[in-house]
Length: 380
Image (tube, rainbow, N blue to C red; front, side, top):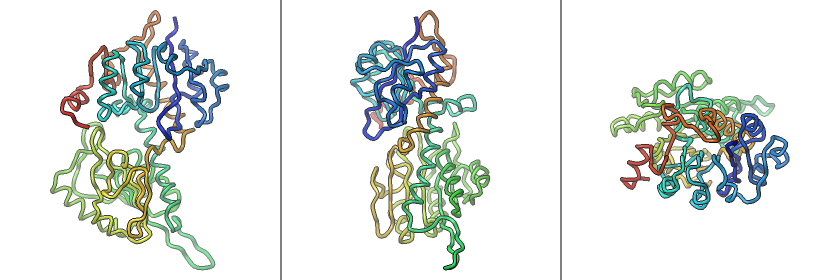
């Protein structure tokens, strides 16, 4: 008996991605899975229902009923409590679960005895690269942030030599050189800007320079386990502030990207720092959804602050739904490749570090220790 995979239409307002493309559906069907997709789930990612039918999937109109029959539910955004309630006991769900914030959802998954995997928790190792959805979607976000900044500034990004004289290129400063930051750097550089970048991890310097940008270097190495950055001490924060302020004051565009998984985004730009920026400059805060790197950021809003445009975009990957969905769908396909089927039952190897590291709930328990501790402490 084939295992059933179900793809519901995303319900979060503004979410245009879909968890599975027809191309991936074809491959999973060929592997023996039975795939069903809610009607119009791929609409905004430009995949018609007919494309899924041609791929071998079934189109369903009653999403909750289909979830109740599925062995595996694949989503982009975390399921709602109603969706969890509709799933059959013991089913598997994979999505951006946001477990550190969604404590009620985690509890609901445990109560329903779901095996819930959060793609944010997939270890960032060489072996896991092909299924690292956090990185694939950050690539999309970094690219779009740079384009938005170029569109919002009242300056050209490249140097132009014209009959009216030479136009100097704009200066773009990117704070944070993770996946999103590096993509923002690369995109701004392609657009012709002078690009500077800062990251508290010294190892990021080589990557920044390889993209043709200037690395602003501070004598601090704050790289932590998994390639993330640790939080700075108060003394280190003072050193960082002094170094960055001079560069921020000269920049035409500042793009901030610094985030810490499961915690509030670090504050890089208090009000006093923003006030150093030139009139007409643009600040794009990519950490708006987790509190913002800028004290003045309003998530989802763009506004003028003393002549400075401050924008805190949310869900940037959804704005490029076609390619974001393509990348995410392949991430999930590779993740499912770690599972095995045996007599119509899903088999999970808990010795696998990727599966063990990304599971949130299983057999009625919260299996991820850091999530369990956050829930006990009432952290968000």
